[in-house]
Image (cartoon, rainbow, N blue to C red; front, side, top):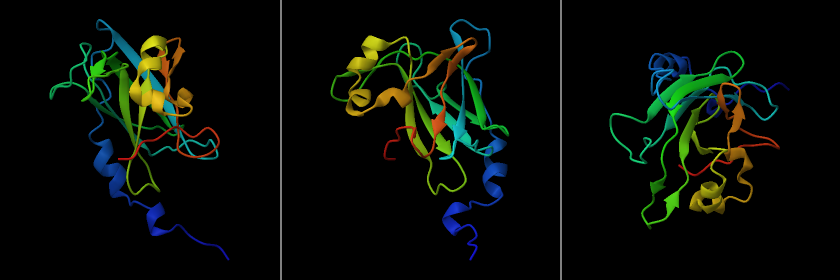
Length: 172
């Protein structure tokens, strides 16, 4: 017996049409001072690309402040599940209990089969000391899936939705 997709595995054609029109992947102009490229792929449990996923980032500015006029971006994924942003490395942010969080991007992924988006973080590989002291990253048993990899043209951060190398996700 062949079973088709269940209602929770389908989102409908309005999903892509409503979100791709608002793609805003350049938080800063490419080539501007401090600009970095963050790119990666969204992969399913079989390590296959998710071509119609949407990736959003939320971040503080270089001084570690959140503001209404900076810090949000959205990128659709191509046929290979690739997304890309041009941004700046955020500063450290104080949390409500006075602890300092390491520089990070909050990453939200919307994809078919997900009734709600999944939320994770991307940490910077050149911040070993800050990462070791980060209260959120320290609470994760194995946070290696949350640290980006340096590449020739910036940083790579893949999101694996399931499987052996699944990215750590947080409750929304």
